[in-house]
Image 1: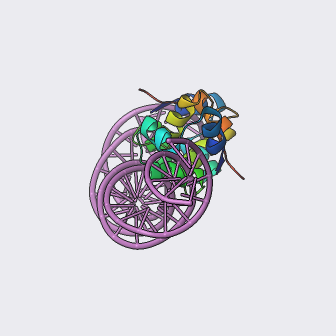
Image 2 (image 1 turned 30 degrees about the vertical axis):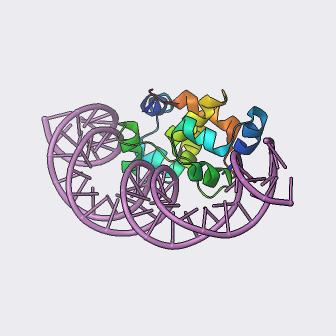
Length: 64
Length: 64
DNA sequence: TAAAAATGTAAATAAAACTTGACATTTTAA
DNA sequence: TTAAAATGTCAAGTTTTATTTACATTTTTA
C-alpha cells in the first residue's frame, strides 16, 4: 500500500510528530505508515483523510 | 464504524459466503464486519470497495 | 413442511497494527 | 558550522483484527 502522506505533510508544513499528535498515534506509527512498513487501521486511515480533507483513495493506493 | 455491506449485498444478491470468497477472507470475517464486531483492514476495505465500485467512504462510515 | 442454504455466534489462535524507548542519521535554522 | 529539530530504524511488548473450527438459528426453496 502506497500513500501520499509525505507530500501532503510537506504541502501543509506539518511534521510527522505533529500529524501523529493530531491523529492520536505515535510518531513512529506515522513514520512506519509513511515508509510503507505497514498499513494504518481503517479508523486511522479515516482520521488522516479527514485531516487532509481528502478521500482515503486520494491518499492511499492499493497496489494490486 | 458502521457500514452498508448488508444493503450492498442485497442489491447485488450476493451472500456473505460469496462476498467472502471474492475478497478472499472467511465468511465469518464478513459476518463480523457486517455486524460491526470489528473493522476490516485497510487492504480489505479497498477490496470490498472495489468489488462494489464505490469509495471506501461510501461503504464505511466512521462515527466520531 | 422438510431439506438446504444462509446467517449468527463463540472460543481459540494467528497475524497485523500500534506503543514505547532508544539511538543513529539527516535536515533545518540560529 | 554547530545545535536543534526532524526523520529513520529497531526490538520488545501490547492491543486489535483476522482466521479457523464448530455449532446453533433463521431464512429460503423444492
